[in-house]
Length: 194
Image 1 (tube, helix red, strand yellow):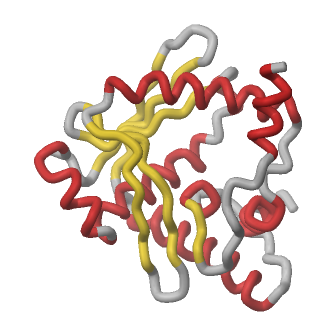
Image 2 (cartoon, one colour):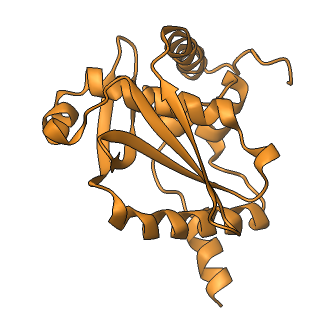
């Protein structure tokens, strides 16, 4: 019964897809074709993957009590589109992003680093975020990516430092997605896998 409820909620559309407004999870993806699919069709993931993600979310929610601040919404307004999202929290004077995993070799590390890059950039673009964090944040150029094994709870922490190159690629790929949606055409693959 619980499994059915988890799947029902996971498959429910959680937000409207509005061209010009992109979630950080979409903007962090490595290829405009994947971004387009996620934006237009939602997750489209198998039930076992959705259940694993629900387990990760439960772990994530349980860890929030240890943060100095949590669930900070932001918007990065760029000339042609906006990237928005929520930062997991601040811990020890740093932005901290939690990701859970079952098998380390399948961790989409670049996507996670891109997501953390977006969060660090939000500090520059969203004045409300800077005001909220005030004295809580000591490091504005580096964030911690905490990878937590769902079975053992062992954690691996990776520092992610601002990268102009990474940010430029994120903006360029999101612009390609935006152009495709505005022109009602499918985007061109930039990763070589499609």
